[in-house]
Amino acid sequence: MKRFNWQILLGLSLVVLSAFLYFVHYLIFRDTHHIFIYLLGDLAFIPVEVLVVTLILHRLLTEREKRAMLEKLNMVVGAFFSEVGTRLLKSFSNFDPDVERIRKDLVVSKDWTEQEFRSLSQHLKNYEYIIESKKGNLEDLKSLLVGKRNFLLRLLENPNLLEHDTFTNLLWAVFHLTEELEYRIDLKQLPDSDYEHLANDMKRAYTLLISEWLVYMKHLQESYPYLFSLAMRTNPFDLNASIEVK
Image (tube, rainbow, N blue to C red; front, side):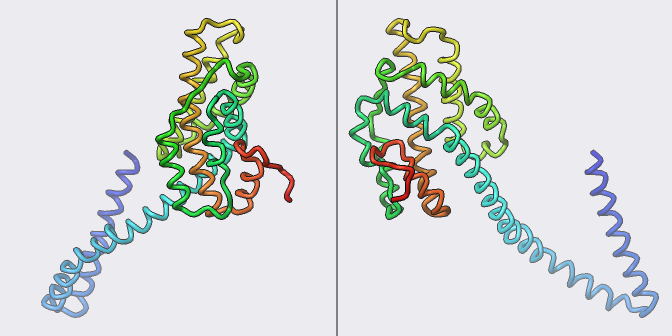
């Protein structure tokens, strides 16, 4: 309300100031005809000013703000993969009995073109993900996720995520899986129906995670070559990946 009152006060002040200046003009020159000619000319130009300000300048400012917001969001995504995402991908792949079908496809290189990223993205959308919750080590997965619980919560509190639905869905899927694992005391003594339930939760997170990882890798390749170099050397799907630069 205070902000609204301030705007009204400013508007009225400007109108009064304008009227005062016109009055001073009249006192000096005593020429109402001249005053009304310029007044009408100024009024006639208002639609053009509105066009320039609202449609052109506003759009430019909006695009600039959007780019700045996306840059901040990419920083959040980068923090996620640096802190937990990359290790989570490697852990999930241990539960995927068919991971060899896509392993080679996910070995991204610096020479990849936009078309190659797009083709792989489409291929992954058609890929039938399979997760067997008994195949890998659920205790290790639980330890990883529970240890990063507070980090995931802080990410979910970030207001920039409102502009990135897919990444938000990924965080919710990972956080839900974290809770599912945390509430289970003994992950080695579960009924088959519960293992199947966990497999579905893992599959949901795994599917979203790979998709976001590919988008993130493309972003690094285009904007941050030095970060992309590290991402290639720590690629969880590349069996020959080495942190050492060779």
